Length: 232
Image 1 (cartoon, rainbow, N blue to C red):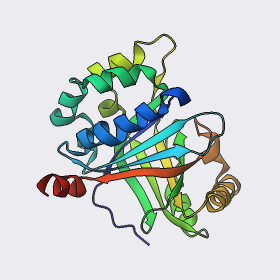
Image 2: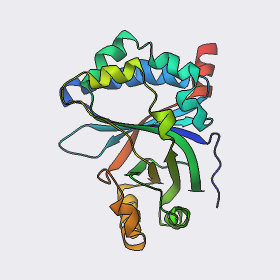
Image 3: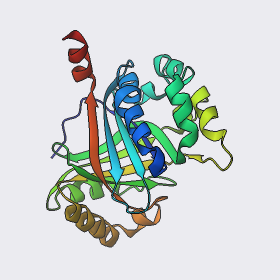
Image 4: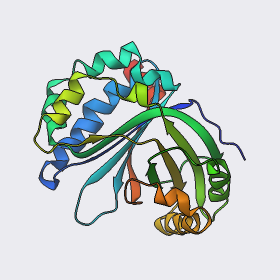
């Protein structure tokens, strides 16, 4: 079953924030940064997730774009090169920063789930990924599955924001070749789906560059909602 999508592009970002700085980080995301991004030409929506980890605060941000071309389009790059004071303060605080944008190559299922697992992959995307996407979408309590393929040339564009991220000693700024994004209704459903993936397509798991964590949704913003709020 195909999934209805408004855009075929994506931008996904991982980062860790110190617990002592988390409230300011959340306020930055929900009161300035995501609205600034979603108001940019070509951006459709954003979803923010937090990893279910006891000893760290890891966030996953998933932007829906009209197309992969938005990742290095002039309107977006202009904002990357003109960070706000709040952004300038926040970016050097982020650790384990991973970022990539490109296009959706495969999708199955319907709607969105409140819990997700996102497998960042290295190297070529396996040829059987389409089969895996369809099979995962049939698992119990799995809402939707997408395969995102990174456009490295667009993702690698330089910017003032990137300079701020890597200015701190020991700072990390990495990317990935693709992301297998699985959405479900609860934690157990995600664990069962990833276990099935490990049995049926072990080579995909071996290509993962990050731990297969479960993330819970904490914030969503759509461009149409932002525009309606401004008109009210």
